[in-house]
Amino acid sequence: MKNLVIRWTIGESNSFKIGLQALEMLDYSIKFSKLIFNNHYNNANYYICYNNLNKKVKREVVNIAKKNNINAINVSEMLPIELRNQNEKNSWWKFAPPRLDIKAYEIIMDNDVVIWALPDTLKNAIECKALVALEDGVGKFYSVFKDTIDNIDKNLKINAGLLGNPPGFEINLTEVTQNPPTDYFFSEQGYTALNFARYTGLKYLIPISEIQQLNANRIDPIDLISNYKGGHFCGCSYDIEIFWEKFYSSHIKKKYNEMINY
Image (cartoon, rainbow, N blue to C red; front, side, top):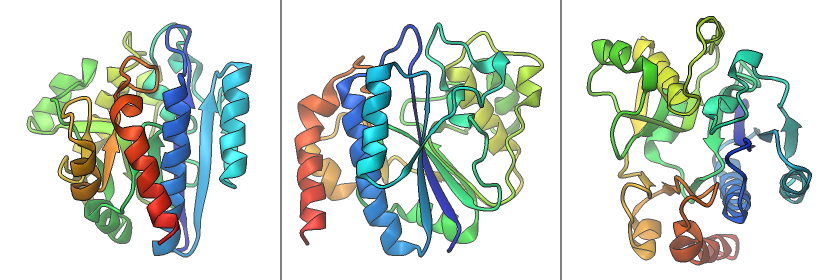
């Protein structure tokens, strides 16, 4: 495939400030992804989409982009104003903009998702141009969209930490901006799940058995690296949790060094 986009989202709000764990996870997420996707695809393009960062964190993010030879884009003005709430945790920023390249297969990753091998489900989704998201390891967190989603697929458990959008797939925020949410965190995941549930084309969920959700299942680090393709280190970006630094960081850095020296 010659037209693959991988983008990361990272940002701050007045209540949630980026910690050092977030920057390290972003850096290694990019490093691993470049090794993996460059090995499988001819022409992958990489971007960090950042929003509302203080000067120090912005400088760090731009430096991460430079040393990894990828592009950094300030998307702080690219989200509809109705969704720009800066007083609480806000996940809608992953849709700033909704698509960077509508003609590409586009992967949107949170900065706390790190993969060290290409998950089979994601590989299949890219090759089949299917819609893809993560399976949630805890339950269904859909805010105001829960009842609507349950009416379509009551068993759907989506985590929006990694999304794969096929060429031509549009994310229309108009229906949300006309009736803005009062919750800006789980409502985004709910809207993502609603789009997934309504989609009639080919679609997959990447199971927990491929990318583990570490706030739900605290897997032994060696077990994680040996038996999974990646991890979602939920809660560590804002230092709500410190299990990335405490349990996983050193093992994952070691894994990266092994891969580049292989």
